[in-house]
Image (tube, rainbow, N blue to C red; front, side, top):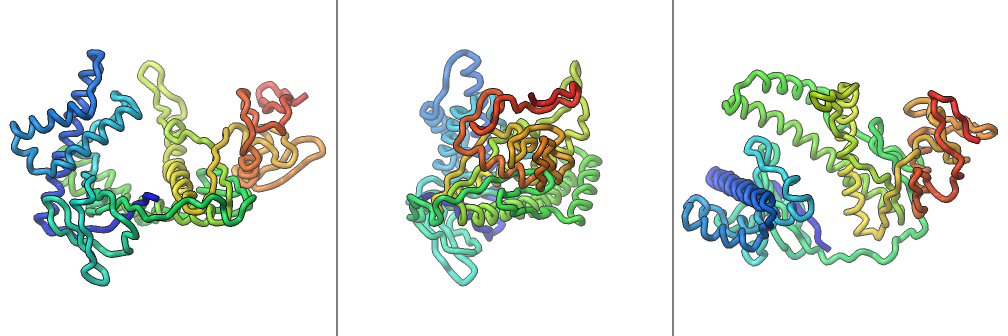
Length: 406
């Protein structure tokens, strides 16, 4: 099974300068290749990896600066571009901005990569043109190395190994028959149908104040100035720590959930669409933009998508099945009787069923998680039905009309 291992690099000043140069060359190759592909598409033609790779070899004869970077890293950049264009479309692939893109490049040939341990805390890896590079030995790679990626994040350089650890996905979970539904929210990151709450603060109060001041300072600096670069670096260091905490939280939560459940049910949430700006256009300006901006930040801060990816990754080692269901009405439906109404959710945390003769009460997020669990394995109708158990007459109550279920 393929898995990732990331380590902090201990680069010398000369090696750090070379990595920066390699990253800039790969960024230039990416942007040039993307521009060429877009021009071909505008003429109704298509440019693939093979002809672009041949043209790269010709370009290296004309431009000496291209020869500074390893050839395999440049070819891998074109491969990544080709895959991105095929999966997302040529005109949806983003440019790699010098200010916003973090330098990275990959060595895809394992024959050119050698790893040795040189002490209790340090190891070293031999990479093309960089030579032997030290890295913090936080844990053994644990398998055969397939590729190595060098990247910079929050001012530090990392090396990530793609490792074949020899593990295989179990045919059956150790606790078969267990299932759990997970409701992801903005108040609590994840709530399960078993009543477990998973959450933590990813940014401290001091870091939030510091980041706000740096944002104000950035707005007063001149573009392309040294002070602007320093301010950006300080902001990236804070957000780097926040991102690491979020990744650690998602990985630990995913491991705990998948270890004791054979089936994990999630809502099929389109995070990118849900966190899209409400500002609109000049002709049709948006409404309640400030409220939507706050909601977008809360969604992105809780790491909904990252938690889903972490669950999928952890499920490979436990044999857990990750199922996604339609999220329609999961927060309005009573998990006890199936009655659906906007009035059922009295507040962010309180749920009380308004159906005659029911009156079921529960934490709103736990109730939603139970609905998500029940929705697994059932067909979702076009009207938003959560499963075969719900009656076609159980429609949401509209406040404006006061219509009640028949």
